[in-house]
Figure 1: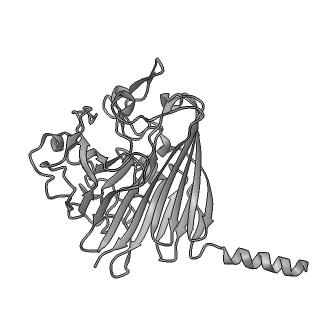
Figure 2: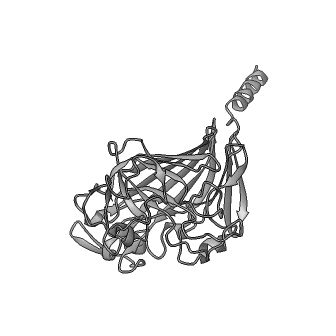
Figure 3: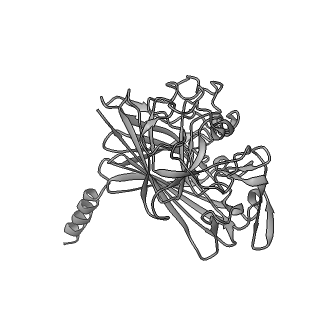
Length: 369
């Protein structure tokens, strides 16, 4: 009877084993590299340095695989990258900008690093993109993943509170890449985590992304000043180059005479997503016509930062050995609005003790004939 029970349990474990999903762990210089695969042949690689996605291999309409994520083959590449492009990283404690590196919370003023002109950007000089996270492989039926944990201590980069952060990457057999964010704190603190992969659906290093067709589910955006800080206005996109409610190529209107395009050197703006706060909704869809690759972004966040690689200039060379040319990649960073700690009309980004920061974004990859 005992042997039959053992056979039954073993059989049950085999039956419940992830179908097609697999995680392998390798050395990546002095840190770890996790490779997630699914039964469609899609591969995502993640390192615990910066919680960085280094690779996303997806098929084109003919089944040919290509890596569509900009990045490097070594940790040194990410550490030493000129102008710190944040390729593939989780950025925080506060993604995007905080004006003049200051905010006031519960009567106390906090001073942060000013690492973007006079403003604070993506968590400061030593943000979450530059730390080594604790990581372990995880999986279940139909998906493989990696769980990453980091404790940002009270006062780190000027922020208040010991912040426990957990990020989970999950690659499913239906070619969905889910990013789940969790955090708790022992002191009130702003938090705004996002994923900062640069995409080129033709393949990394394969030239400009201006021919990609983009849809954004946003009727408003947040205009910025000369320092890329929101003015506080929610401006309509209708009748402006910022209207992506009907799909169009990224390059169609980027050269128009428009003050916001001049200030951003192109598109580098937060878009206000349609839909209720905290509910999963379609944020963006991108189609690349030569490969047929399609990427959709769904999120629970209220905003998305669309950045089209304005500061890439061919200096950086990635995994293919090819230069990352001007506008050779785009980012779609799901987020709360920039500078929210100083903008009381924006949705709050303050996490308090006893509460949990919890949000999710899903990237879905497919093809179109």
